[in-house]
Image (cartoon, rainbow, N blue to C red):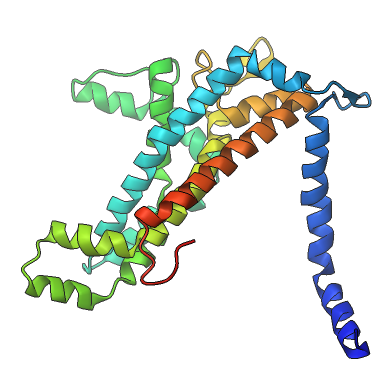
Length: 305
């Protein structure tokens, strides 16, 4: 290699060295370490002891593991479609050129700047079955009053409703995509007598399908790691210790159970095994979405991913 090229190489490595150090220290080393710990019995106080696949066998025989997986899949299959559909409806409404629409766009984005913990505490008060404002309103209308915080049948729907309040980030992405759809396509469709529904299904949705695909992938990964809202929402004092995942494990999501194994029960080996199982699930889900995206994602002549 020429002297000048070697000099450029060293200059380049010098400029990216902060990122390299951060990547090695905070990403690569923890990932490789967790793979090793997943085959060990490790409680942070004593050196890890190699146990082979015992952690995975323990998980596959653990009823709570399956319960946490079932709760997480429920949120992915029910909560995620509600989240994305609600965001899309709001984006369609906010894309209309109405007077004062900027105020409403800011209003719907405002909840996303509120910290998740603070907003979850607010919704715990709203959902409180005794004095919450939601049940008070339902009682005023003569409707049944669900036990949002204490009834396993209503705890996950309550989290889904709470999630609809914070869709502002997704709405902004959809709104930007809607603004990029060429007006000429709508004008040509109107000349052919197309209805609003036809223009939506034949023009708008195909044109914004890459953005829809992006939000589906990102939110699937996020929903499989559903943690903070469930932790704060279900936290109750019991026997001098904070209990989470209730009522009756109905909000014991996968990431929450992983956290409890790691930092409450100090079963780092078991938690690492759970992390790698989650990684493999997300990897398969992402690959399936990528492989099937060519059937419904329109790239405007470009080659699909």
